[in-house]
Length: 156
Image (cartoon, rainbow, N blue to C red; front, side, top):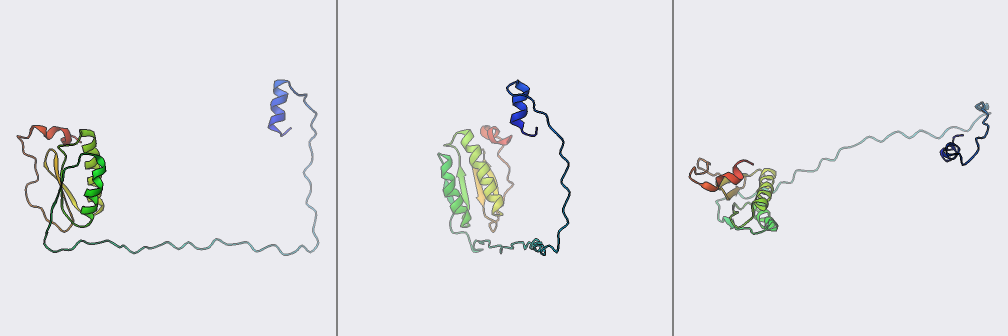
């Protein structure tokens, strides 16, 4: 009684249990001059793909432009990303955004700067500077101690 449906029906009393007989396993029959077996296919060697590292390097010339962005919604991150990829430093002023969207945008900007080997620095509590890899930024990098709004982003 190898049929699960049949077993269930017997258990529920919907069918009678039939007698089962053990069958002996059939013995293999000796074959006469069997045809040669099909060749066993061997697994093909796996060749890893080595894609050339095409990294678009921004020009190492002097900075001719700095973009200042005052985002109001998270979708303004596209403008930030497009300009940062071109090697343009971006100043992000988050004063017009809610705290939740501002944190989300800063997380995005942090990933963007990490992925493109740039740097993100806080200028004030709601103003950040994204600088590409080839731009050096000097200064102590600390937030002014007298800034009362430093707390919302400082802990995270």
